[in-house]
Image (cartoon, rainbow, N blue to C red; front, side, top):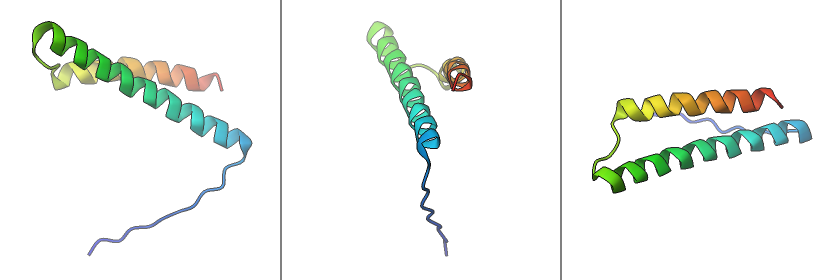
Length: 71
C-alpha cells in the first residue's frame, strides 16, 4: 500500500519570485536540451546518447546555478 502526502504552500512575494524564476530557468534548460536533440536528429538521423545529454545538462545546470545566485 502506497501512502501519499499533499502539502499546500503559501509563499510570500519574494519566495514566489524565486520559485517562478526557478521554473523559468528549468523550462529554458528543457527547451535547450530538446532543441539540441532535435538538431542532432535532423543533421545525422541519430538521437543524442545518454552520456551526451548528461554532459549538456551539467553545463546548463551550471548556468542555472549562476543565474539563481544573482537573486
